[in-house]
Length: 255
Image (cartoon, rainbow, N blue to C red; front, side, top):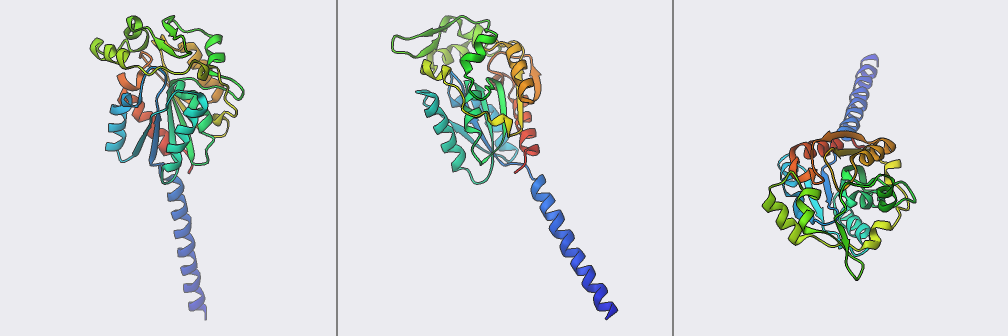
């Protein structure tokens, strides 16, 4: 009887140990889905180099093409892509896309947030509210007669993408997406960074969002932050560093 009890105890211990370490492994496993959200005056194609690195490293990457017709439409477009993924996702936003992921990040399938030279509004706050706190260096944003915004092509390279080749910046200026001006002033209803872990990139040479505003927002949100000597399009000019931060978020966010 003693031998049976001993081996029974050992078997139980093995089962319990397997269950424990299996659970621990599941918790430690990185999030495998990455959802990338662009900002104003750009589209999802700008994420190409970041997406290549992430895909090469084994992540499933999806890129949101927001219509930029309203803040609500952009949030819906983002949650639609998040909900299409199998399992949890890391949600990454650039510029205005940061406001979008702050709202969309409340989705139960979002495990963590990454802000890249982005707005991180609080609950009840809009990107416009933040921009007024610490204005950017650029004054090149113009409005159309029917309420949409564009960045003056003559200033696009200097104010938006100074560390990209001039020809690339010129094409971006020609192909820029014009967002509805009203989306800039729409407040976030609930800031997801209050309940989800967050990471952030501060672009120290940013002329589209004041770098000191970026520092203020990341500190307020408690985001794990890196600084890059970059223009506003840090995800394009520093894809390796941005991808590395996204992967850190994927490895450290709870599932």
